[in-house]
Length: 285
Ligand code: FAD
Image 1 (cartoon, rainbow, N blue to C red):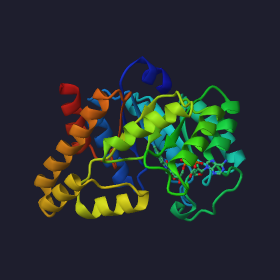
Image 2 (image 1 turned 180 degrees about the vertical axis):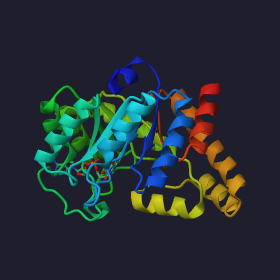
Image 3 (image 1 turned 45 degrees about the vertical axis):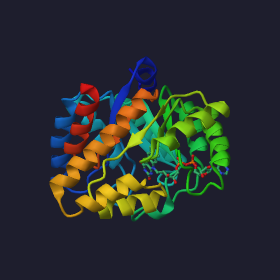
């Protein structure tokens, strides 16, 4: 079943991984994936972090996760990481591997390592339109409950998002956020703009003060006072921080599901412990 079919069939739970850089990290990721497999996720996704040295990491890892664990895999692809010709080749490889789901993104020039940014596509909507022509893929896109950092206003961003959906995005996955009010407000505004596809909330358990500051500054997402207080309280106490972080994310997840979210997408950072604890809390209720 493709991701969009799973989302339409009921609550869908998913995990996001990134391609490891070393052999040792790859082996560790397979252990993590094995742990998470036991929770029966509806799909997993693999980010596109294209680099000059390792151009095929996303496709290779996607294929390995499908072959080894039987996951439904969503391969991320970015505009800045690939030319139109490369996208066509990747689509052929994905089809050979039995992968039918792609999350199409613009990407960011500053995140490329050892690779000149490509310019065949400027926005994700252009990549999506091309991918729709490439074959029988189900395509998703990204969205930002607190607006994309480049957009002047949330309304302007949502107008562009509508173009992305019209180009062929069948579902959307959100940027991480820590205050559910942003998600619910976003759902209302998206619906008012005529966006009727499932919008899957992305959640990330915080594991430390520095991590929280890095992510929230990079992604321009707000940190509610209760989260900041808890992170400051448990800074330096690994187990205390873990417990607080899992409790916070689990409460967020349960509230989202109660409010009608079509499932949860967990940013795992290639670790299983927090993701497992959160999903167990959620599925146990
Ligand atoms: P777009 O949808 O193209 O939008 C980017 C900006 O341009 C927005 O401000 C939008 O309002 C504006 N815009 C869109 N269309 C137009 C237009 N026609 N004219 C003018 N302005 C326009 N990055 C990676 O490198 N690899 C990944 O694997 C990856 N996975 C991600 C997964 C999720 C769920 C999310 C939320 C983000 C992910 N990212 C990833 C980060 C993403 O690439 C960046 O946030 C990037 O800055 C925007 O990508 P986008 O696809 O949302 O861009």
